[in-house]
Image 1: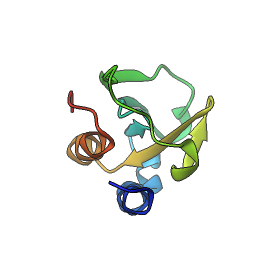
Image 2: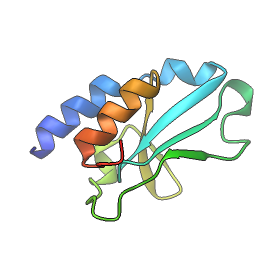
Image 3: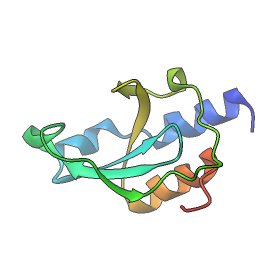
Image 4: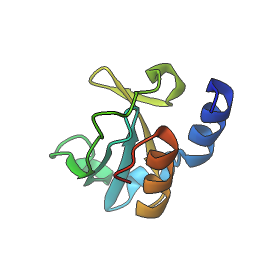
Length: 95
């Protein structure tokens, strides 16, 4: 998959409005999927790794991702299924 195709998948998957909800799924540039509390508690609690990164997954450039934090790029996904689908596209076979 080329850069433009991945950018299109990332843009479709990004749903920042879900950050106001109770729980927030995030997909990172290496295909890791994390879950954390949303709303006023966003970034105030622990990120729980629910799909770990695979050591053979080559991370995509963080500038493709609409969210950036801690030197990493991320997408806020609508739900677990969408997060896992994007993680697979990034190249994480654990997803």
